[in-house]
Length: 379
Ligand code: COA
Image (cartoon, rainbow, N blue to C red; front, top):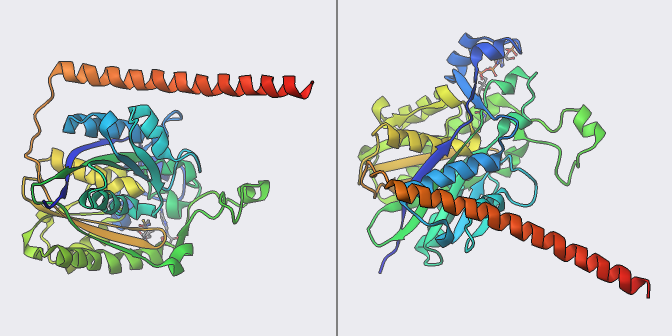
């Protein structure tokens, strides 16, 4: 029997703190008018000191699991698309796995810049369609505020923090992720990069002094690249899915710049009501932007069962990707009974206790081994 990868759960998390264009105008030589007209952004969210990519990813994931009424212990795989992981390793996906108590799941991070979520959706859906897995949690999460040079007006006005999660589930109902197109052109890698902190330029006093741990970007070239690939990738994914442009209910692009989205919509001849834009509130949240946009589109009643959606990402790498989805879940989803919410919270508490006990176990084990080695050494 044919298998399909349906999106059955969704959730988002953004920090409470809002940074407006006027706030930025007090920090660098810019203005609300310049930012609005050149980008469409009005405000963005900034993580509190204790918030990280993992904490936002966990909250978005918990909402997605609640919406789907899914048990985290039954997840097969967790993919976190991010350019701002909590650590280079362990993977942020493993932090999410631990916090959710997803004891059966594999977990890894995916690095494809702002295209990461769409790449992850392609990977996760193929894992399901191939028959390897039944439930895959796909997350896009970023804390870009930690790698922004707040004195560089070319970049600091563009980005924001947040996370979005989608739960993919195997189904025999035709639909879900119908096609995926992935692209890359590494020759443009240095147009958008974080130069230091990897194996080429490990962190040192010099790299810090030279500001190499901040985002470096050639905005004009990235703009040109993005306007070139967005509509093209959407067209390719539609052709692969055998879906006509006229049958698209909603176009959800990476929310980087309103002018890039407009140019793509114009090229695809899509009317404004078929184009979703929310970047005025969040700025560019990199791999979190597409899932956050999809969550808000659902919340606003702009997605209905059997609708065809196109989602497109582009970004560092350079990378780009597009997926076509036929929505398979009736909306709105009924609220779960209170006891189920309480039961779920209890499970997360238990996951935290389990994690604590296991950490303690590792510590005791290594202390015992140290004692053993010392005693044997003194013989
Ligand atoms: N406020 C005021 N002026 C600014 C500014 C700011 N925040 N940032 C740049 N400027 C200035 C520039 O210094 C330049 O001045 P100059 O002509 O004296 O050198 C001028 O504005 C115009 O710069 P330009 O690059 O032509 O502007 P633009 O219309 O291309 O807009 C971006 C700049 C960054 C908004 C636009 O290129 C863009 O969105 N690029 C894509 C970025 C992106 O999406 N990156 C992430 C991809 S995932």
